[in-house]
Amino acid sequence: MATICNDRITTPLKYIEIGENDKLSLEPLQRECSERTNKDHNKISLTEGCFITKQTGLHLENFYWVKPAQNDARLQLEVAVYLNDLNLVRSDFSLDQASNITPLNRNLHDALDKQGLFAVTCSKRTLEALIALVETQNKNYLQREGRYIRYFNFEKPPFTDATYELVLLHPHHFLPKNGDALTVFSEHGNDLSGKMYFVSPDGALREGPDNTLPRLPAFPSNATRAQKNILNPFLVALNADIAFRRFRERPHPLCNDYDDLIDLTIELMNKIYFQPLIDALHRETATLRIIFSKEKKSKPAGNAKPRELAKNSRMGVVIPEPGPGASPDEVIKYYRYLMSGCDYEGDSDSDTDSDSDVNDDEDEEDEDDEDEHGKDSTAA
Image 1 (cartoon, rainbow, N blue to C red):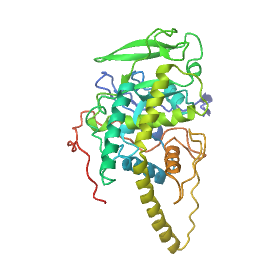
Image 2: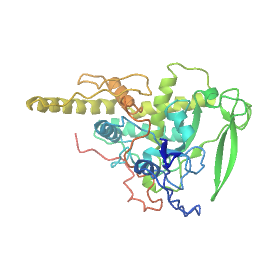
Image 3: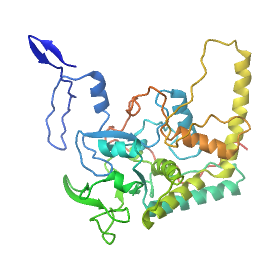
């Protein structure tokens, strides 16, 4: 905001404070800054580059792959518990953990999160490996008649070596002009080597505007993170599944490779939302709701206001919380809605303000290994 000081027009400069970066041999920059601005910036790792382009810098923003309503801690907890019930995350998971977060170039962040011009999913190799794992766990669940907890060892492949791909859903909006390109870097020690990728006539991102040229290859997540902080490919696939289902409501032709990735992503999520497991979770949730409603009726009514439905979902609709008689499909749609990035009116456009551990020490010691096999549940 401009003001007049000593007969001169002036404006306060609110820079961020930039810490020392030993890896890149950069000294700190001590500057005047607002507490909020500095807090947001400090969530970004100074050494981890953009998830897609691999370029490091101060132009990055954290992207949350599962992002429910920002201003409702209850919904955030509900989503985290649901992901745990589906056995897709570690037992101590929260939405602010690094396994749910990656840094992105600000323009790519906006194109992915706000505009839906592209999606990121796992590579074909990773998707096929995850599908095989989930199928095995689902068979074990059936054989034990539900007295089984699906188990995935996040400290082994395909979780530790997962790779990812871009799927351009609106390629000519993503790079609208002839000659527009996305520069993606390869890491060679501490050095980067860049290559430009263009939208080809078939809508794929290739080394040039020609359908015969190679596509942008699959890329890994950051390899220097502590093991417990490695990006969870289930959460990436979940985010992509929401985008792909929305896209297929009003589809248009994409290149064959993109169609294959979309089909495999949806197939994986269909197996994750395993019907017998969803039925069991729904029965348990319905029982808890009945107990809770009875307790609530026995208490005097206070001044509590009814909870407002979240809005602005990437699904394009508002889905109310299912009641006790809801079908499993209605339950799945509701949780997809919660995880789609829905916001309340008046929410800021920034990602969730709570602190994340994405900038944890990359040399942190690994946690003790978990048992490699699925575990019998104690509940009959």
